[in-house]
Image (cartoon, rainbow, N blue to C red; front, side, top):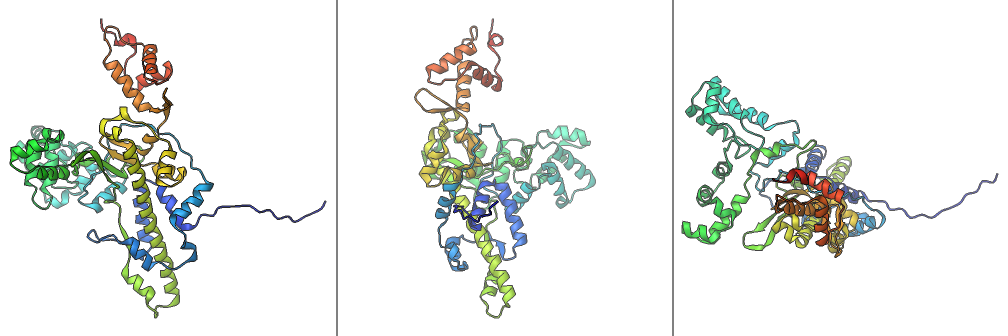
Length: 478
């Protein structure tokens, strides 16, 4: 048997650490990103969290602070192109879900918010009871306070009347009201409100600056505000429409359900990576906020930068600092690149799905990954990574990014119809049918076919069941 040495030439892509880190951060949801940052703050002494008043000037400062390396001469875009050319990420179609979670657009206590999100086994009730110590209550008052907290639901609303709580604690409605007011001063802001109006007013009380106009609008003009009747409100209050619009912007930044930051799906809290809201100045436009208020903003500690520059610092310490500072800068750049990628995808979705954002799910037209990737100049696998386990807050609710690429059916004219869109059509058809002669599933199939949507009778039955709509013979009214 002859033994021979042969040489084979193969091409293999090796991801540099900086690119690998970016891809890892791109794929994880915001909650995991926060946890990752918290770990890095512990493990890397050169990293620190920026003060809220500092301006972010990373792109310029990174160039000055970065340790030179030939490996870093390429741009992140070139790295992505190299990676994308050789790898494809699996994309599993997701379906729309009716989710009631959303992120407060204006988080007043970032550290509190972050801690509450990261403490998965902590309930709103436990969190409130943990703050009772600052209220200096007597034993009897403490008993009442715990009864009040026990009647605050998961969304942060107080659902029992003063009389009911008074009866349960052998107290009076007046004393109960005093305790409720104290509890309403606890975090999260707005907790203990008995309705939406009170919840918003409690938050406005904590706002700095003059909020008198905003409070008046919340107290007296919420129905008009919901219809965006700015001119009508302005005339009634003898103020300019611009001031009313400014108040509107302040109101939509408040949290209507302050307790829901403690709500958990079976495995995690759902936090959107982007918020899309109508532009009050132009009803045909939407404002996009790639949310980062609750994500720590990082920088390199100036003391350690100075130590690295100091020639008297011993070589071992300088080497340690060099490695840690570079690791910190790589992390900061990866976080910024993650945010930029999500923003690009969101902007393109808004451009392509304006009817959905304005009118609702029946106007959703699912896209291909390729539609977005070609427009923003990345590979489909990058878009697929970016939408994994991520959510977007829209005027229609908080939904998975994957909903925009959900499972679909081909319509007659070649356009795609999402499951949600078809279900909305079915719901409308059945709601408007003659109750004495309701449509059969076969008739619904034919009606959809006339609209250019081809699905089977079995699929219609499945969707009808999901909508909790009865079969034909049970819908018939005699």
